[in-house]
Length: 426
Image (cartoon, rainbow, N blue to C red; front, top):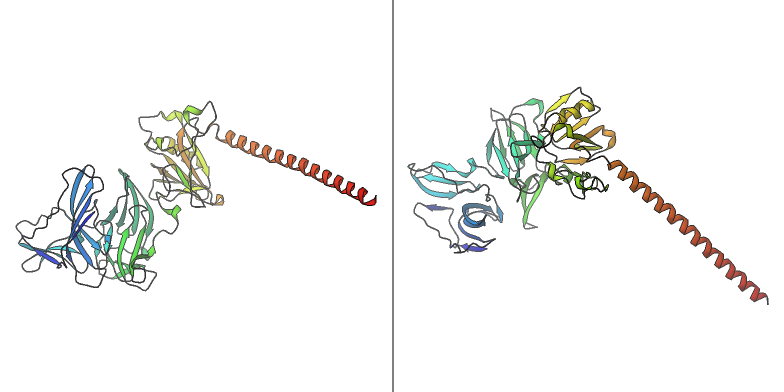
């Protein structure tokens, strides 16, 4: 990484200002050049703006980024270097405000363009987001992404893949009150109605003032962050999800997050191994691409997993149905990959992706049904019985051997003691 600090920069630069960064002639993987061009005049950590060049996909990407201390607020998937559309509007300078908002101003200091209108994965203190706005973050090397969305009746977290989106966390104002906009304050995320009256708040759990809200790129978790002078870094004062199993991608597709916060694959009989009764060792991601036009419906069946559920909501739902009807609903829909059934509520949820699956108590009455090719589960129970019998036989054999060896040792010890007594009597 090449870093260029242009002295103690001002908080603005005027029209005609130029900053240059050298780009390597040949492509260098991992190259990152950066020149800080502006910073706010306030107590550290303060806001800074930088011109950056980053090696991406065999090309170099040029962007304008905003930093709060060492935390980058505008990343490669959500740059502040957009085409602003302000030509002919009398723009005189680019300025970074004390709030972290990057703005273009005219001679009368009127804002002609601002980065706050183009949120990425971070919301700063004092920033407002209107209803129907969302933050977006992208995990590295994944086609799946996360969004934090402000809706009329709630704020919610979503996992997205193609045209699929499922919510996995939500916060609703009481009494079904509608949201008009959200604002990040010093003590939490504030929700307001159309009369600018606060109707709900997601509160920070510490007394330190908040600096930003962020949607995690890797986890999809939502956090409120403050700066800790003692630790010299930003720390979370609130997180929407506190257990890893409540995260949508805690495990790979067709994986189950267990009570011990580890991942266990939904293990199916590998097609090429059906004659040998071997179970596939990895998660069966190969069948996660859908069944439409690929596999005849009559060659599919549902694998039932008891004590397993999905954290995903907003899936199509059927009520007052039996488990068999729920299973058939998924089998008859080529886009359906799994279903969750509640025997207590007689509810059925249909999913087009197998993620966000976790272990729950068996008494919950929840069953998770996964669509698989016929024969994938045929010898599953047989294998488990075999394994159990082998373990049982091994334990019994071990006990028998232990008893024989123990008896032999006892006999030899008794015999030696008897010989010693005879010698002493002589």
